[in-house]
Structures are given as structure tokens and as C-alpha cells.
Image (cartoon, rainbow, N blue to C red; front, top):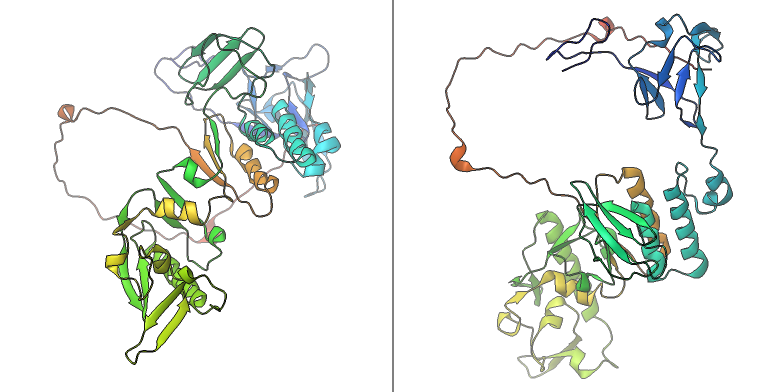
Length: 428
């Protein structure tokens, strides 16, 4: 049933009505009632019933300029000498004066709409800067960014846990917490909690890629300090090791998913770096780092080991370039890079993104990198909820038939024949 109160109720008939947008002042964020006058108004519009606040504007199906009860009059405009206007009275209007930003937020250059979550973000960020980033303060900042609750007091006891299709609610003896139902609970009924404890697995932090044990990792070119056309992907599984020769030196590679040009550029880069490393002075180098080759005339050629194949060589006596027989048959690219290149400088943050999280909240996470020491980076893994639907193939019947179709006509429209007009509304 669709309501049409001017002409009575109509059933199964959609009521298509226009929407009118009236831009609000920049600091006006909410209003309960819109009235045509201060006393004894002829028209009263209720928020949520007659209008809504959306994207900084009043959105309503009522044309205020065509409603006689609202006083109309001219007002100065930047685009013309005079512009049409309508006078409305707002009851219970809420203004955002950005006190938190003006007092504290500007120090860390974080500007968002005033809210309790914004206060959490600024407080957590300043705590990290003032006292040094610790695991606890860093997790507190992450939880503030995505709106994930943390236990407020030591000694709280979980009384009950309710889960519906969208939210999970944890009730303790002193507080009530809510998080997205897409996350798994980390607490149980009767459990005693401590302050700062997370209630779900929406936020998980590992010290490096190796402990995170992800199925695959995509590394950006900035992390590798190499000139690559795009990111490379490292699979967490054993793949065959490919062996070839370049300029008398052994070159190794493996098949990568993703851009083939990026994979080829990555192995060419590692080979160039390895060749440069073989040319370094071996005077003080340990014997295990020196490759000694015997020439046909009995002389010796010595150089420093430096290529990837050299470090994968399983032999202890390096008297020749490694071959497929002295190299492992397979390699786990993810674990090899995670343990040898990024074992101590790339913490991993995994976030379960709930429908309630906005892009504006995720944008703040970019500031998390500034909380790390200069030699550290951050690797974010965003897990979005899966949309699963069961389909029984046996119940699907398809009938395919053909029909003749007309040729699609294409008509060019001259831009000069299109007239676009606009009007600016102001509410005072």
C-alpha cells in the first residue's frame, strides 16, 4: 500500500513525488521542526516525517516556495542583484561549532564532524604522540577510527550477549556495548573484563606478515623501493622455483599472480641488485660469503655472493654457480619475503569493515602510519562482509529462444540545442 493523502489511499500504485533540496548553513547539522512563523504557524514540518537532513541539506517533498504560509522575499545574491528566498523558522536547531577541533583537533590536523567518536579519535591520536605509540594506544586509535567499542572499566562482568541480523550487544554489570554482527565475539557470559579490552575480532594486529600468516600479500612499489609498474602479489603456498642463467650467473624466479610485467620487473630488479652485490670487496668477507671458481687454466676467480640464487643455494662449499640440483625445488614466496625482508618493519592490521563504517572513517586510518617509527610501515587488510545466497541448480529451468531485433538507431545531439537552467535557494 502506498499512501496518497491528498486523493485518498491508493493500493499497489507507486506515488512518484519530487524531492526538493534546501542547503543548510555549514554549521547547522540538525533541526526538529520547520515552522512558517514563530507563533501559531500555519505549517509545521516534522523531521523524519515531512523532511530529513541529508548531505547538509533539508530534503522534502514539499515545495516551500509554493506554500503560501511561508513568507517569500528577495535577498542579495552573489550571482545576481536579487534572488528569490523564503523565510522559515527552525525549532530545536543543532549547530556544530567545532569546539573539539578548534581546541585540540587542529593540533593534529584531524577535522571531522563533532561527535563522541571524533573525540575518541583525537584523544587517542594525541595520546600516541604525547606518550609514544604503544600496542595499547595504537589499538585504541584504531578502534576509535572504525567505531569499535572497548571495555571502559576494570572488573566488568559480561551478563548477557544478544545478536541480531545486524548488531551484537554485550551487556555487562555496568555498561552496554554494541558492534557489528559480522564480527566474532571474543568474550563470553560470566567473563570478567579489563579496561581497554576488545570485545570482537573486528580489529586484529600482528607484528609482521609472518605472524599474520595471510593467504596472499600484495606489496606496493613504495615498500620495495623498486621501479615496478604495479604491485606484486606473494602467495602463501609452495610454488616451483624457476632457474635460468644471466651473464654466467644463476637467476631464480617463480610464477606470480597479477601483472606479468610487474613480476618480470621484480625479478630483473633483484638480479641487478644481486650482480652489484657480487662486485663488493671480499678482503674481509667471511669464507661462507665468497664463491670460488676454478678456471680451466687452474687459476681461481673469487667474488662475493649476492644474487637470490646464491642465498638459496643449499651447498656449504660454494665452488660453482648454483644449479637446479643445489636449489630447492619449491619456494613459499610469502614466507620468504616476510621472514627475510619485512620481518621487523611492517606490522599488519586486519579490520572487518561493517556496513556502519563510512569512507570518512577509513580515511582517518591514513594517519596511523604517522604513529609508526620512521623505519616502519603499516599493512592494512580490510575484510568486507560476504553476501552469500544459496541456489539449487536442480530448480533452475532455462528456455532459450531467438527473435529478430531492430538495429539500434544513433542520433547525435548538438550541445547548442541543450538548455540547462538553475536556481539558487537560500533559507534565512
